[in-house]
Image 1 (cartoon, one colour):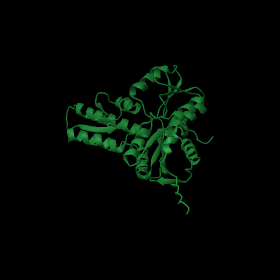
Image 2 (cartoon, rainbow, N blue to C red):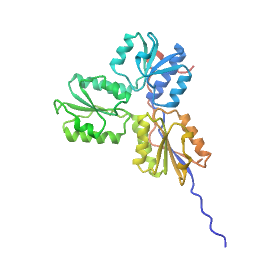
Image 3 (cartoon, rainbow, N blue to C red):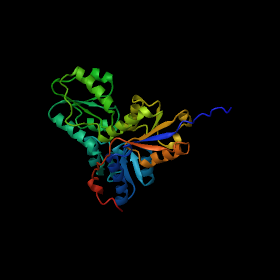
Image 4 (spheres, rainbow, N blue to C red):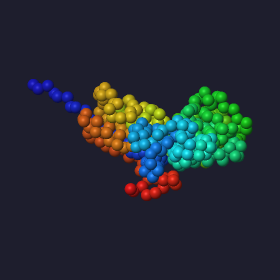
Length: 322
């Protein structure tokens, strides 16, 4: 009598859509590429144009020079401000050094800056929910430093002091987890019942959409791989969202070669997504790597179709077709 053979567990990949580049990242990266084409190298970029290792390395190879501070840019040179935005003080420093500037701030970040200025003019206390030290938070807080208090942790909620509890509003970093932000908002409302909501959602559409896609597929996944860099806030959030939504395991990787093959032990379904600053070529490389290990069946899980596009900064607003 022949012993029954075990049926191999079918291997498959669930691929999140939307994933990868958002409109703001695409605009910022193209702005640097166009600046290099039109003005020639070197083009200086203050901070990382977007938080992605591959993008920064690729642009560096083409002649972009990334600096941490405006003072590192030679006087009179061309500098691009990153998608995360900068404070008015940075614009002033650039003017003092006679720098030619291209502002690649994401328009959705600019919207939050405008809200901060408006509520500061109306003399509100502004509670900015975000991660301490993140470039976007520093830029937003710099718009109204006398009115803004950063709220990062639950402990920060306890420390908040306001002048008039009836004139308090919250704003947030655009790349946070929607759920995480609302936890903090509810804690603040417990302390300040009259806390006002911003006039529109600050969490950007792309961040929200990518999290929704991961929430949808995570319960079916033994493992979720998120392509993104460790300093990318929205990419880090995707790992957290995957775990909170039912994935048995989730890891953040920059490249396919960083996947530990031990992660695949006993795994039948792998979820794949990427942060909003990740070019899709890195996802395709991961799918190829997984395919070589038996995960060739790929099903795209679509939860939204993104059609938003932003105009390029005026300094590089020529045809994108060469």
